[in-house]
Amino acid sequence: MTVLFAVAALLGGGITAGVLFAVALSVLPALFAMDTGTYVYAHRLLGRNWDPTMPVIVLGSALLDGTLAVRTGGSARPLFAAATVLLVGVSAVSHLCNVPINRRVKAITDPSALPADWQDPRPVWRRWHLLRTALAVLALAVTAAAVTAV
Image 1 (cartoon, rainbow, N blue to C red):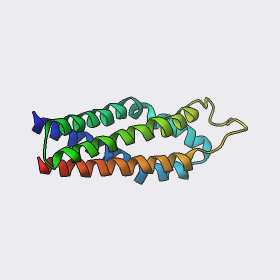
Image 2: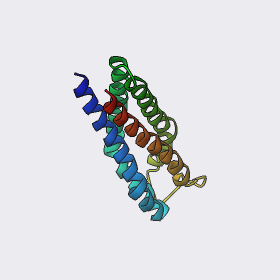
Image 3: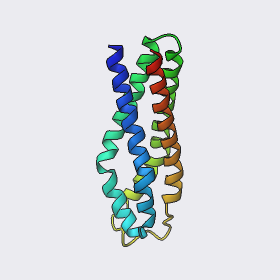
C-alpha cells in the first residue's frame, strides 16, 4: 500500500507542479499581452475546469503525503511531512489569495464595460501564482526525495 500511495503522491504532486508551472510559463504571459476586456473574458474561460479540479488534486496529494509521513519512518518521514506542509501552502495561497481575485474577475458580466473603480488584478495574481508554483515544485522535489528514502 505504501508504494501505491507513494506513486499517487508523486503523480498528484507532478500534476500540481506541472499545471502551475505551465500557467506561469505560458498562460500568464498571454494574459498580460491581452487588452483588459479580452483578459477578463479569457480568465473566465480558463478557470472553468481547473477551479473544481485543482483543489481535489492538491489536497488529495497533501493527504497522501501526510499519510505516508505517518506510515513511514526514517528519513522519509520528515520529507513526506514537509511535502504535506508545502502542498497545504499551495492550497492556502490559492484559496486565500488567487481565488478571491478570480471571483472578482468572474463577477464582471460585461468585459467591455468595466466598473469605474476597476484595478487590473494581473500583477498581484501573478505574484501569488508564482509563490504557489514555487511551493508546488518544491513539494514535488521533496516528495521525490522521500520516495527514494523509503
